[in-house]
Length: 109
Image (cartoon, rainbow, N blue to C red):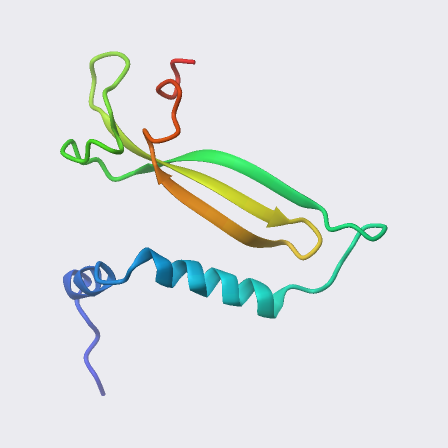
């Protein structure tokens, strides 16, 4: 029986995967599993942009935000997702660093 990989080994190997691999997996899954459901001939799609907090890393300047009240900072990514309401599947997603498309820091609008 093969031994299970340690958590450290798993994380190290996962780090070798390019983001394009996950994009291709999502694209292929969506194409193969999406039923053709329409509402009076139209696909109903929803688009949403959300901030996703990730583990803290003060040295990652592209995602790091200082705390509004002088506390610990935090790291954010921005997720834009396209969702097909009929098939209940995500069709596409774009993940960007937290500062790239942030007009103001979250909570400071």
